[in-house]
Amino acid sequence: MDRSDAETLVKDAIARVVPGADLSRLGPEDPFRDALEFDSLDFLNFVEILSERSGLHIDEEDYPRLTTLKDAGEFLVARAP
Image 1 (tube, rainbow, N blue to C red):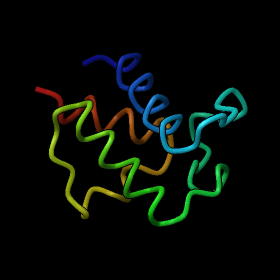
Image 2 (cartoon, helix red, strand yellow):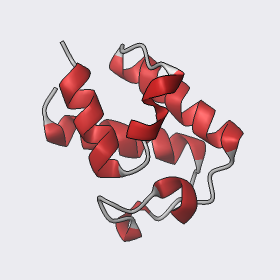
Image 3 (cartoon, helix red, strand yellow):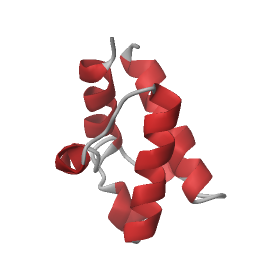
Image 4 (spheres, rainbow, N blue to C red):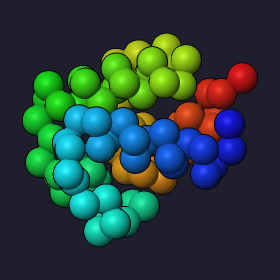
């Protein structure tokens, strides 16, 4: 998985949790939980979707690495087989 694929995957997961979210105004280093008003359940749904779509197991200890588009993309690229 390359960086572009990872970013697309992250954006798709966000869009599934927050339908109609304007992702164009979300910068690569903006904390999307704050920008899109994710609550805890939204974030868990995001992680579940990301895990299912990427085929990666995501542990709770990995959650801090999934706060921005950039960080989440880098996490996926680093963990992809």
